[in-house]
Every structure is written in structure tokens, then in C-alpha cells.
Image 1 (cartoon, rainbow, N blue to C red):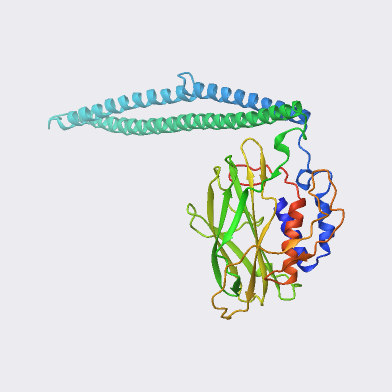
Image 2: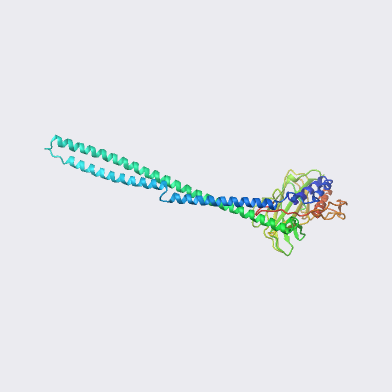
Length: 430
């Protein structure tokens, strides 16, 4: 679970049961952050993995070599099927010659029969008739033998083509297996090398890439979100993510979370509010993922900003109540450094019952409620939870006391949270 999810869950709990904050906060005070409870593979384990990958690669190379030899053999003149095909072709050629000879003999026999004179004896007539019949039979046999021989040629050539095709396919598959094994070997070697480098630099706690840091200059600002949203309607607004630092952030992951309750603050309406997003490069509306993250911005240069269109939909069945949209941003650099907004910024709005006519309303503003954090100290990976003090709200808020507490909770928990490594693959976040 990402740390933003934990924060959002804690905030939601604070709306309905403020006392839960007391049980949530210590989750961030463990010896190690939650996202790091799963230990990384040891160098010894990675060495075994690298050795196994090397063996698999060697085996794949051997299999590819064997497949290449098999194909060469299948294509050689001495291959059994090649020999059989040539023999069939030779036999077919001989059968063709025999048929030609038989046909010529038949023509000659017919001519001799037809040239018999009226004075020919019965013996001469019998001999000519017999010769013609034998020639006709020989021609028919020769024709059948030629057809059979040609069929054997087709059969032999087909068997040869199938055998050679299968040999080529096996070589292609062997080459793909070799490529895959090489990729696995390369990845295993890289993981081992990195682990050894980290170990040389002081182990898990000595590397800069093992702990993310708060970055207040990664700003997330919402504009255009109405302070009142009527149930059964959709409203469009905008999130601007700004890199206020002097360094490029390779990947920035905007976080957006909407929470709502009825007017009592006791009944959760989260299932009735829905968030979608779109950008200039991806104009189609997409749902915010189940971890409340939007597609990454890659990269976000120093001093630059990116705008994301957001759409909030409140189901028509939602009762009158109150809502808050929290935003933040996380970043991840190619060199392993990472961090994000230290707090969740909450924009409060009211939910009007379906069919209401609220008239012209102002935009929602960041919650003015601030928690009393005089006794709250930022936590590190090994520090304790707040020693005491109150999370009660001070000042005023446009929403109910429950949502005011939620905004305060977001700031309080955010101030005490430590960013942890979230290793992401290209196109996704872990």
C-alpha cells in the first residue's frame, strides 16, 4: 500500500471516528516505514539468482547451437529426406521415360495393325492384334507407374519441406529463448552489482535511494472546483503540479483523493463520488486508479508545471453533505532519489441534494483549518509518534467540524510521515 493511501485512509477514518487518529499515527512510528517491511534479497541470494541465470543462459546457447546444427543437417545433401526426395525424383523421371517409350510402341503397333493388307493371313492378323493389345496394356501400366512416381515425389518433397520448416522454427524459438535468458541474466547481474554497491556504501540504510524525502517545493494546486456540487452532476476543474526546485524530476505521480460524508459526518459517501482525469496528451477521460494516482508526468523540469484536467461526479442518490478533495505529488528519479509533497492539501466543498439550485458559488479553497501541532514532531524511520498535544481544529472552516478535523488530520499525519522507497517499473508504480 502506498503511503498516500495510508494517509487518505487515516483521514477518512478521522471524519467518522476522530479517535482513530490515535491508533493510526503509530503506524508511522515503527522502526522502519511500512513500505520497507519486506526485506530486499541479500547479496548471497542475488548471487545464487545470478548463477542460475548464467546456467540458464548457457543452456539456451547450447540449445540454440544444437538447433542450428539440426537445421544445417536438414538442409544438407546427405539428409535422409533430401536423399529420399532425390530418389523419388529420379524414379519419376525414369517412369516418365518408360511411359514415353510405351506410348511410342503403342503408336507403332496401331500403325502396323492398320497397315495389314487384305491378303494378310490369319496368323499375321493374330500377331498384329496381339502386339497392339500388349502395347495398349504396357502404355496403361507405364502411365499408372508415372502417376505413382510423381505422387511419391510430391510426398517426399512435402516431408522434406515440413522437416526443414520445423528445423527453422526450432532455431527461431531457440534464439528467442536465448534472448530471454540473456535478458534475465543481464537483469540478475545488474541487481547483484547494485546490491554489492549498496553494501559497499553502507548497506540498506547507507544508500540515498532507500528513503524518500519530503519536498515542499513540489506544489499541487486545485483551481475551478466549486465550493458546492449538486448531487447528480459533474464538475470539471484543474490540478496544476509545479516543480519549484532547481532540478528536473524524472517521474512525478500526482495523487488525488475525494472523500465525502453526509451532514452528520458519520456516514461515508465515498462510493458516491468519483474522480476522472485527462491531459493534453491523453484527452480521453480516465478513472483515477484504485490507489488514487494519476498517470505519471515524465519528466517535470525545474521550475515547470503540468496541468491535469479533473472531473468530479457525485451520484444523484447522494444526500446533502460535505466533501473534500485531497491532492499531493510524489516524484521518482532515475538515480533512485525520491520524495514528494510533505502534506495532503485538502479542498473542501459542500454536496447539495439532487435538483438543488445553489446559484453562483465560489471555488473551493484549501482548508483553512490547521491542527494544533505544537507537540507534534516530524517522525523519521525510527522515531516515535507524537508525544502529546491535541489534533483539534483551530480557526474556522467553510465545512463541518468533521471535515475540518479531516483537513487537520491530513496535515498532522502528513507532517509526521516519512516517505519510503516505492520502486516503480516503467509505465506503472509499485
